[in-house]
Amino acid sequence: QVQLVESGGGFVQPGGSRRLSCAASGSFFRINGMGWYSEAPGKQRDLVAYITTGGSTNYADSLKGRFTISRDNAKNTVYLQMNSLKPEDTAVYYCNAAIFTLGANRGYWGQGTQVTVSS
Image (cartoon, rainbow, N blue to C red):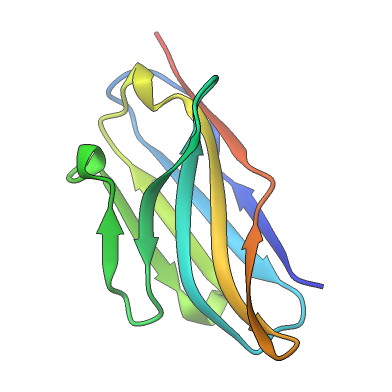
C-alpha cells in the first residue's frame, strides 16, 4: 500500500515562509512526477507546482518566484518552499505523485495540510 504523508502546514503571518514536505511510503517500484496542489475554501483544487524525476519544474504563473518545488529521490520526498506568503495563499495543500506500482502508473494523493496566512 502506497501512502503520501504531508507535513509542515500551519499558521503564518503575511510575508512569512513555510516549507511543506510530502513523503511517500509503502511498496512501489518508482516514483515519477510529484506535485503540489492547493484547494482554497469554495474553490477547485489547482496545480501549484510540479517536478519530474529528473528535476524539471512547472509552476502556476501566479506563484512563480515565490514558491519553489524540490525533491529528494533518495528519501522519496517532495518539498514546497513558500515565501512571501499572502492571505490569498490560504488553502489546504495536497501532495500528488505518479507512482509505478503493481504493474501500472497510478496517481496518489496525500491527506492535505492546511496553510493559513493571516495577521
